[in-house]
Length: 123
Image 1 (cartoon, helix red, strand yellow):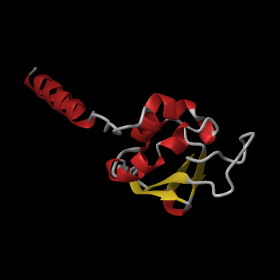
Image 2 (cartoon, rainbow, N blue to C red):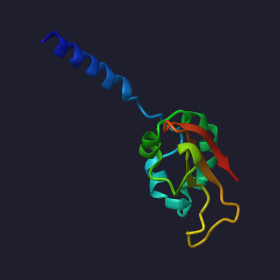
Image 3 (tube, rainbow, N blue to C red):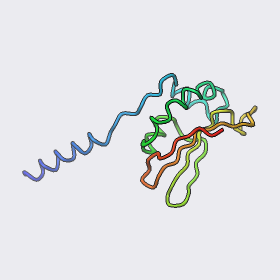
Image 4 (cartoon, helix red, strand yellow):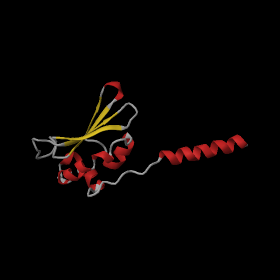
């Protein structure tokens, strides 16, 4: 009986400690960001400078937290040693009816543990 209470208490603290709040990106409507797939609608491009200022907020977030915050990536790549790269087009991608040849994108590299290790905007 005592061990069951101890187990329940530990489980409670473990679950409370795992769920941390997602950061808020000031000046960026994440719902509009998610709807602007591959940057075709132009919303992502209009928020590029605000995003660059806040990339540090994304470092250290878990892969699933990034998906909850920014939506499904436009591109993903599995690399050696279980590293992953996610890309979100900021300027309209090649799949859009009109696209920018410069093709700016937000790139996140996840380590083998699934945490964002590198966050950068590529131009």
